[in-house]
Amino acid sequence: MDNDFSEVVDLDALTSWMTDQGFGAHPIEGAHLLEGGTQNFLLKFHHDNRDYVLRRPPKHLRKNSNDTMKREARVLGALAGSKVPHPGFIASCSDESVLGCCFYLMEPVEGFNATTGLQDYHRRDPAVRHRMGLAMIEGITALGSIDYRAVGLEGFGKPEGFLERQVPRWQAQLQSYNKLEGWPGPASLPGIDTIPEWLDDNRPAAFVPGIMHGDYHLANVMFCYDSPELAAIVDWELCTIGDPLIDLGWLMSMWHDPEEDTPARVQPWEGFPSIDEMIAHYAERSSRNLDALPWYGVLACFKLGSILEGTHARACAGLAPRETGDALHTSTINLFSRALRMIGKFNG
Image (cartoon, rainbow, N blue to C red; front, side, top):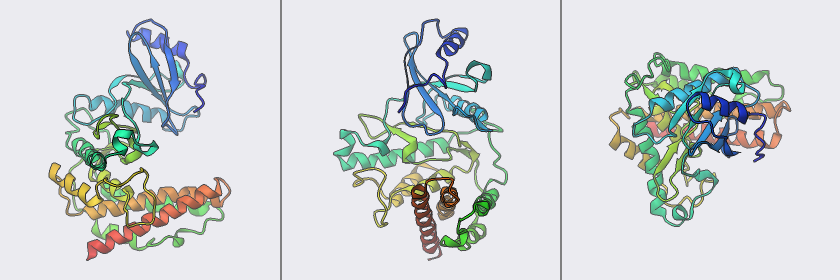
């Protein structure tokens, strides 16, 4: 990674702000960008006998970039003292004049991302990898069990009508790609009519609102270096108050199935629990009703495929690399095919 951060973080301005906030007047030392952020920046540094990580939006702000930082800071603050592994929140700044954007400070996480390579401890023992998968389940059962009102997250999301909004939202996303010249259209995708129709017909009648991460998968958790446990769940930008079973559905859509002809994101994969084992582990630790769980898996496949297909549509119009677009189109086909298999199992 290019570690020239001068255009995204003014260390003098940051030092002045931290002094004003009572963090000490010593100069910042050892500042460097961390790997892992494709949109937002992570800057680790040392200041007055303490290590920090600063998180800020992209250099070219999107419409909701500052609001996203405020929301992330709010939810990390709300999780303090909970059983949810997360980066410890330190402070936030909503004054855009300091760095040109909102930002926040958090504790560094002592852990690694499994999708970038396992540690020797995890690589050599299938039993350790099995526990890694179960630890991921425990992360979202802990998150979903929190009383969001009690931790100050009232109004953080709109749970009313949450499930009813899902299918129309992602159908509209797919239809929006029709304006991109060269895209063959949604008819090229398997189950394009069957999947949303089934989702509408089988939508759960009710759910218990709670905190959901919104993008829960292997690349968004960090594991401890010397154990299979979670060090932290990261990338909270899609967190909201909704149906926490969405997070389990997301795992159902993305978890590797050895019977499919697709590579695992982590090598070696031997030892990781199957998705059925993961679901059983969830059921043992949550009071949530899982009778309609296939609906959440099908929805996740439909949502993720609809998002990925956007890059393919842009590639068809010459607005993204064709190789990338083709690869993600294949991923969308695989996801929609997985959704159809889930439907088939549910229908018996």
